[in-house]
Image (cartoon, rainbow, N blue to C red; front, top):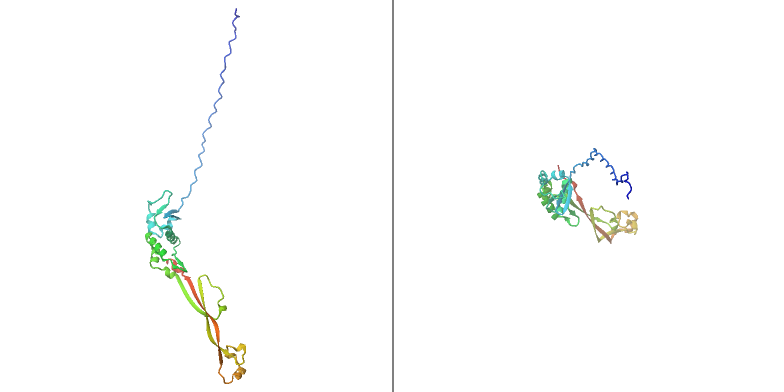
Length: 242
């Protein structure tokens, strides 16, 4: 037989209480720091042929009709990198830009080869294309031939001892050596200090000569012809007269 029913109810499994969800942190009310503002860069990049140049727009527009017009509005030849393309020889444009920067006319001169006329013509064509009038006029009138002057001089030196010395780098010197024959006075008393100088002989020498004529002998002497070639640059010719 079974026993009497129990008064105690069986224990039920307990469900764990979930941990409370933490409250979300309040949104920050601090505004992010603004990005630094950079001042606009007042430069322009030119891709001229295979070369790139960086300069200021004012440098280009103050002396070139071409750039004054192209930079007055939107330039249609802007590249993806922000540069402007010009289909010209960059090696030649370098000299045009140098003039626009400094307003000094170019001189292409070598002491051996002389003026580099082909380069003058190339710069002249770009000066016409870019509308750089002072440079164009200066090259068309070939004023560069006046900027470089060659001064020649010559003198005769009595011997090699007169050749010694130094010259400046713009002076080229040539020496041509030759032997000459000259008449040298002979003292009748054979005094060495009187040789070549009749005025050095006094009464005793005249008495020794008697009624004979003065005696001379041939002497070989060294003569040096010095020819100097000096290259002179006139800087005033290279600066535009305002």
